[in-house]
Length: 88
Image 1 (cartoon, rainbow, N blue to C red):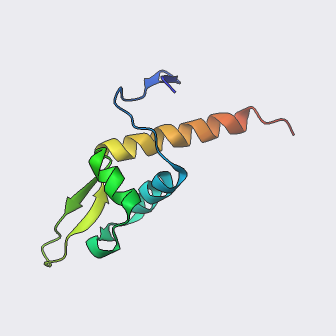
Image 2 (cartoon, rainbow, N blue to C red):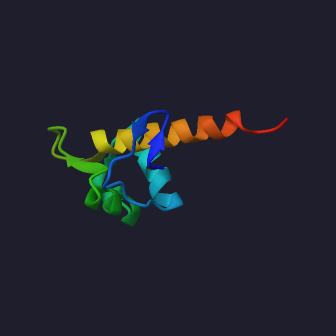
Protein backbone atom coordinates (compact mmCIF):
# COMPACT_ATOMS: atom_id res chain seq x y z
CA UNK A 1 0.00 0.00 0.00
CA UNK A 2 2.99 2.31 -0.38
CA UNK A 3 1.91 3.57 -3.78
CA UNK A 4 -1.56 3.87 -5.27
CA UNK A 5 -2.22 5.79 -8.47
CA UNK A 6 0.65 8.14 -7.69
CA UNK A 7 -0.46 8.77 -4.09
CA UNK A 8 1.59 7.73 -1.12
CA UNK A 9 0.20 6.31 2.08
CA UNK A 10 1.38 8.14 5.19
CA UNK A 11 4.61 6.62 6.49
CA UNK A 12 3.12 6.23 9.95
CA UNK A 13 -0.12 4.60 8.74
CA UNK A 14 -1.24 2.12 11.38
CA UNK A 15 -2.42 -1.42 10.72
CA UNK A 16 -6.14 -1.42 11.45
CA UNK A 17 -8.39 -4.29 12.45
CA UNK A 18 -11.70 -4.77 10.65
CA UNK A 19 -13.48 -3.33 13.71
CA UNK A 20 -11.23 -0.25 13.72
CA UNK A 21 -11.87 0.31 9.99
CA UNK A 22 -15.63 0.02 10.59
CA UNK A 23 -15.40 2.48 13.50
CA UNK A 24 -13.43 4.90 11.31
CA UNK A 25 -16.14 4.69 8.63
CA UNK A 26 -18.82 5.40 11.25
CA UNK A 27 -16.91 8.40 12.53
CA UNK A 28 -16.70 9.73 8.99
CA UNK A 29 -20.50 10.06 8.96
CA UNK A 30 -21.02 11.60 12.41
CA UNK A 31 -19.22 12.18 15.72
CA UNK A 32 -19.82 9.55 18.42
CA UNK A 33 -20.55 10.37 22.08
CA UNK A 34 -17.71 9.67 24.51
CA UNK A 35 -19.77 7.27 26.59
CA UNK A 36 -20.20 5.19 23.43
CA UNK A 37 -16.43 5.20 22.89
CA UNK A 38 -15.26 1.65 22.32
CA UNK A 39 -11.76 0.26 22.44
CA UNK A 40 -11.71 0.55 18.64
CA UNK A 41 -12.38 4.28 18.78
CA UNK A 42 -9.84 4.72 21.57
CA UNK A 43 -7.26 2.90 19.38
CA UNK A 44 -8.14 5.24 16.49
CA UNK A 45 -7.56 8.23 18.77
CA UNK A 46 -4.21 6.88 19.90
CA UNK A 47 -3.13 6.45 16.26
CA UNK A 48 -4.24 9.98 15.33
CA UNK A 49 -7.18 8.91 13.16
CA UNK A 50 -9.85 10.16 15.59
CA UNK A 51 -9.95 13.04 18.03
CA UNK A 52 -11.99 14.15 20.99
CA UNK A 53 -14.08 17.25 20.27
CA UNK A 54 -16.43 19.35 22.40
CA UNK A 55 -19.34 20.76 20.42
CA UNK A 56 -19.99 23.32 23.17
CA UNK A 57 -22.99 21.48 24.54
CA UNK A 58 -21.03 20.03 27.43
CA UNK A 59 -20.84 16.60 25.80
CA UNK A 60 -17.52 15.61 24.26
CA UNK A 61 -17.53 13.40 21.17
CA UNK A 62 -15.07 11.47 19.04
CA UNK A 63 -14.65 12.66 15.46
CA UNK A 64 -12.48 11.66 12.50
CA UNK A 65 -9.26 13.60 11.82
CA UNK A 66 -7.78 14.70 8.51
CA UNK A 67 -5.39 11.74 8.72
CA UNK A 68 -8.38 9.43 9.27
CA UNK A 69 -10.09 10.79 6.16
CA UNK A 70 -6.91 10.20 4.18
CA UNK A 71 -6.85 6.56 5.31
CA UNK A 72 -10.47 6.16 4.15
CA UNK A 73 -9.63 7.79 0.80
CA UNK A 74 -6.78 5.32 0.26
CA UNK A 75 -8.98 2.41 1.32
CA UNK A 76 -11.72 3.54 -1.09
CA UNK A 77 -9.21 3.78 -3.94
CA UNK A 78 -7.96 0.25 -3.18
CA UNK A 79 -11.51 -1.10 -3.24
CA UNK A 80 -12.20 0.61 -6.58
CA UNK A 81 -8.91 -0.67 -7.98
CA UNK A 82 -9.73 -4.22 -6.88
CA UNK A 83 -13.12 -3.95 -8.61
CA UNK A 84 -11.39 -3.05 -11.88
CA UNK A 85 -9.51 -6.39 -11.83
CA UNK A 86 -12.51 -8.64 -11.21
CA UNK A 87 -13.34 -11.05 -13.99
CA UNK A 88 -17.03 -11.30 -14.84
